[in-house]
Image (tube, rainbow, N blue to C red; front, side):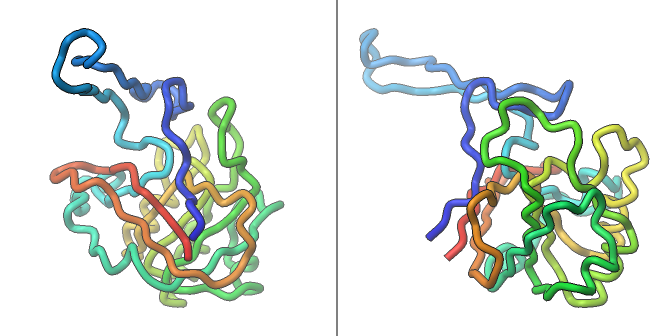
Length: 200
């Protein structure tokens, strides 16, 4: 079993300007309380997370509409190192699966938030859809460039009906076939949630 989830800790890099993660105890046994109880503050796009379509399309489905069967089952990990942008031409050289995860060379722990990473061209999204891909996973923090405002890749994924998992920890994972289990927190009405993702 391989854990492909990024660790969450105080100071973990988040998207520039987004809500940072914090965890603090509001009750402590050491201070006379009967239990230890913590409080979380965070962006929903924390570490390894699932985007619901509502995140990038206002008429898109919220988190509870994402089918669980899409998030569990056979998958393929692809080595996409060296690709500045994911193109249909590159995809034609590899095998795809219903759930395909792309390792682009991102480290499993970011010392600072990456500003340059592989983004996805809409033509590549359309090609993946034609090949039956339903879940796209990446070790990058987004499928669009950091400075993108119109989010062409996100919108292409929405049109294609392909769900997106971002921020996977794929360093050290060999390319090949696996079984994926990738379950988000059940945050009804939300546009995203952290996931615990594993391969076996």
